[in-house]
Length: 97
Image 1 (spheres, rainbow, N blue to C red):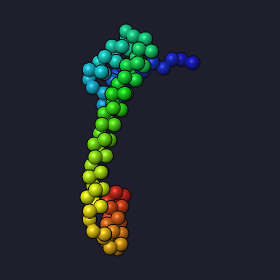
Image 2: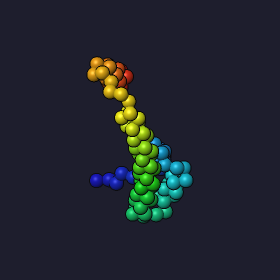
Image 3: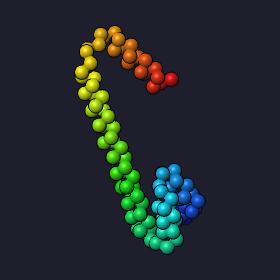
């Protein structure tokens, strides 16, 4: 079995597609030539953690918006069942064109 070593351009494209900062991409590409695989994996784990932290931050922001929306919806008078059904139907149509 032959080792499949990824080409530098392919790695750069993957990191770009993963929305990694240019500084990280350059650092990783250099590490491919100068550091061990375990060091390269450490770099990738660290970057993954950073990106996951950003996702969690954005998720918290959405939670705040959802809470505000929920609070406001609770203050609305109860809508007739037919109007609510029509609104849900319209929503489904826009989500599934």
